[in-house]
Structures are given as structure tokens and as C-alpha cells.
Image (tube, rainbow, N blue to C red):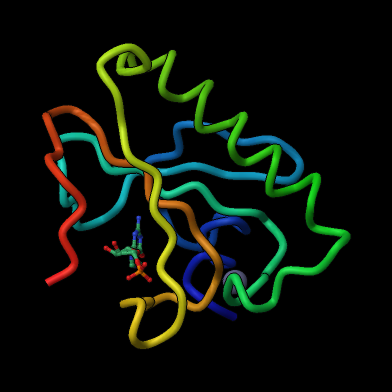
Length: 113
Ligand code: 5GP
Ligand code: ZN
């Protein structure tokens, strides 16, 4: 079982900030910004390449969860960044699709060096 599935099953601890029947959001263990949260579907989908037509509602729901988290953390007006890595060149390390949510400082331009 992958590390995020273990978090979903509460077999691994995480600082959970949101949970419903389809989605979970928790703080990244190695934050790259003052606020760094990972939003994941509970379903084990490995990468963006594995998304199917029947995932449309789930993906839309994840963005609405991101919006809710931004409001609750008070960063909705200042701003935030949502990022997904896909496969090796995209820098993906955990093969359970996840949406990085960064906030808490001016993040600057997106630079992919
Ligand atoms: P990726 O590089 O796959 O897009 O991002 C994976 C992210 O998962 C990294 O930012 C990493 O710090 C985070 N991460 C890896 N293992 C764990 C874990 O066990 N718990 C939490 N909360 N985050 C993790
Ligand atoms: Zn998984």
C-alpha cells in the first residue's frame, strides 16, 4: 500500500486539515512554504495520466476543497499556488495523485530551472 493510502487509512499519522468521504488534506511532512498542504483523493490514482472520465467530479471537488482550505486559513485574498507533479520529469515522488497547496508568503514567479 502506498504512503498516502496509509494516511487515508490512518495507519500513518498526518496533520489532517480536511477530510470527507472522497478527499483528504494534510500538511506536507517537508514543507516548502509556510503553508504546504497536500490534497489527495482517497482513491489510489497514481498520476494525472491515470485520470479517467469518471474522475471529473472528484477533481472538481478537490479544487473546491482547496478553495475552502484557502478561506479557512485566511490566504484566499492574498493568494496561493496549487501544483501537481506527474512522473519522473515532473518531480513526482509519491505515486498517489496529490495537489500541493502552497501559501503564506509571496511565492514569486513559477520557475522550472
Ligand atoms: P511529489 O514530489 O510526489 O509531488 O510530492 C510528494 C510530497 O509528499 C513531498 O512534498 C513530500 O514531502 C510529501 N510526503 C512524502 N511522504 C510523506 C508522508 O509520509 N507524510 C506527509 N505528510 N507528507 C509526505
Ligand atoms: Zn495510494
